[in-house]
View 1: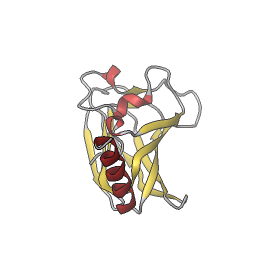
View 2: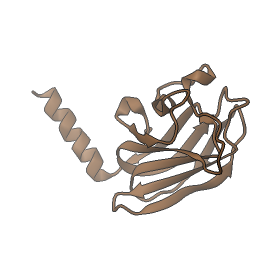
View 3: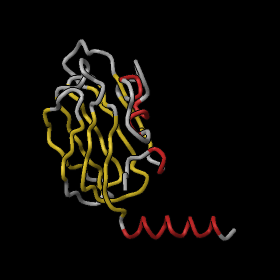
Length: 155
């Protein structure tokens, strides 16, 4: 399941730039039809980079990351990195700084520890149409979600 899907309850906690659009856009369902339907940042005039921090809808392990630059032909980031915050609070790079192509759905197989947040760094700026973090819930997360669902059904 997509641990970063807005429709499942994931959310953007913070980001470096909301100039053109909200970073929540990259967590929307479906594919972006235009550049404006993703997260697009302004051009940087310094040596920094843009970033967004995403709270997964529940702790889990990530097996596949999709960084989609569809429709971003002239404003795609040159590179991206994913850093996870584990359930113990440690930070670990799960996708090292990697070159991206414009207008492309990039997929990367991963094997992560149990994580609850992910920071996406794009270098130097640009945008992302969609971010998907496919994986499995931790057993504890699955039990909590099942209990919440059952309580809702049988109220």
